Length: 149
Image (cartoon, rainbow, N blue to C red):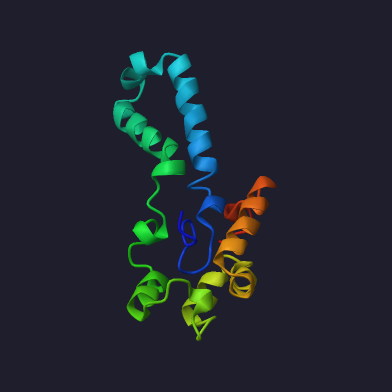
C-alpha cells in the first residue's frame, strides 16, 4: 500500500468520505432488504426503472473497494485542486509551498477541518497522518457530518 492511498490531493482521507463508508454499507443493507422482500421478482412492475436502480445500487454498494479515489477521478471531473496539483507535480497540497492557496481556502469553506488536517499531515507525514485518520474513522467520523452546504 502506498502512503498516498486514500489521501486526496487537497488533504481529505477517502475512507472518511461517505462514498467509501456509509453509502456502501447503506446500499448493501437496502439491496439485501429489497432482495429479501422479493423486489427482484416484481420490482420492475412497481417501478419501471427498477433494473436501472438495482444496477446503480449494486455499484454504490461496491464503492468501499471499487471507488477510484481522487487520484483515479472520483469527484468533480473539473476539480481545480486536482488540476492544479497535477500541473504543479504536487502529490499533496499540504506539502505545497503555497498551501493554503485560494483553491484550498474556497474548498475549506465546505470542509472546516481541511486546513488544520492539512497542517497536521505536513507536520507528521502522510503515513502517520493516515493512521490518525483510520483511528478517527473508528469513532464514526464522516466528512458529511461536518460539511457545510
